[in-house]
Image 1 (cartoon, one colour):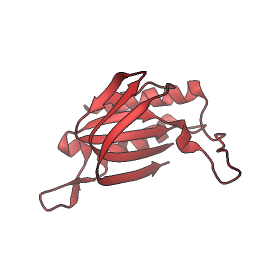
Image 2 (tube, rainbow, N blue to C red):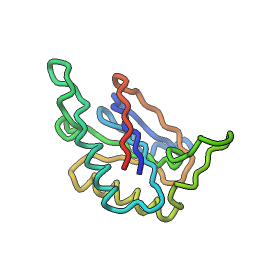
Image 3 (cartoon, rainbow, N blue to C red):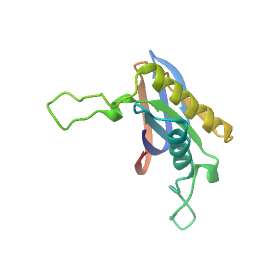
Image 4 (tube, rainbow, N blue to C red):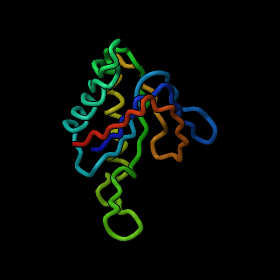
Length: 145
């Protein structure tokens, strides 16, 4: 499983011109599910994302997590994170989980975050989405398990 975590001032995702998810201060998580990912990997990545200390304290140091600031989270499925570009010009997506398997883990990821009391918004799994964000910092990290 691979997640790109971006600290944002705001972010939104639209599908065919309709907003499916929109947040203020918090994190945008682009989530790629690999073949064979289990609930254990999903929980580890989810916990890492929400507990990363990437929000600044009064001194400008990264001392607060999403949970600490009671921020929002936007989760967008993105199988292309698992694209292998080492050979040729066309990425290979053989490591990405198939649609049904990936959607199951993606939905568990979202449910897990909600169970932590977070304000979670999402894109639409498998849809062509437009994602807009204002990256705060910029702060962008890759979490992989």
